[in-house]
Image 1 (cartoon, rainbow, N blue to C red):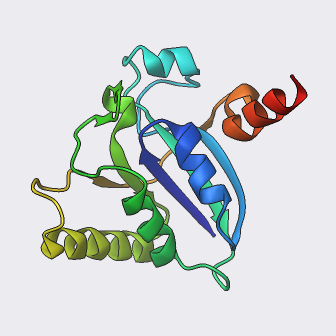
Image 2: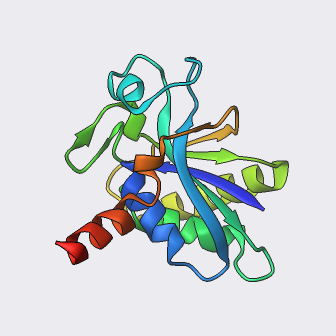
Length: 155
């Protein structure tokens, strides 16, 4: 199964999902824009309309889509429009790209339940949209934190 999430800078989002039992692979890239074959600098320039996203492949017999959503909600502020921490711009927006009608229903229900809990002072601004063309980011961005830790260990 496949799930795609945008929750700020994709490096940290990917790292959070890679730790989960049942996640079989992850990659980072871009989705939701109008620009063909964007690179990191294109997206950073805010002209493409893409969000930085993490695409997660998972074994649904081990981890459910609902459990992935629980992690998604915990790793970022879903009430912050086009910003996560110091990162600003629509490429850092909170967004769930669904791949099936079932994922859409589960995501919308999860968002509403979280909003109804009253945990946040503001409304949740997370977009829920159909998955469209996924553009894989360059190799230097894949598993970025793992690579950086390996470099530090060698220094």
